[in-house]
Amino acid sequence: MLFAYFFMLYIPLCTITQGTQEINIPVSQEATNPYVCAKCNLLLFSHEAKFDATEETLSFTRPIFPVNVTYSRLDTFTPLIAVACSGCSNHLGVIYNDGPAPIYKRYSVHATAVMQR
Image (cartoon, rainbow, N blue to C red; front, top):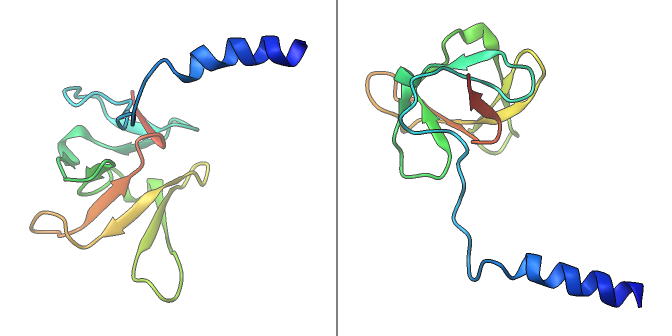
């Protein structure tokens, strides 16, 4: 009986939205505040370095202070470089070589790994 009661309460919560949900990026597109690590609040990226890419992740050209991010190779078979916060080792994303000129680097950062201060 208890299971049936829980099941009745659970079903309406699951079926409130129908279909596929959109990606929810928790940062504002118009804000001018810098981006910090979501775990330790270390200053990582400025809003000037952000650009609009066709991905669902945030894209930046460079960090504010290069010492605030650490770089590591994902594996020996792919040329991707993983980016992490140097304060807490929080995985931020990866670097691609398809960014805007003159650097041609794109920091593809997960929206849940950073927040705006």
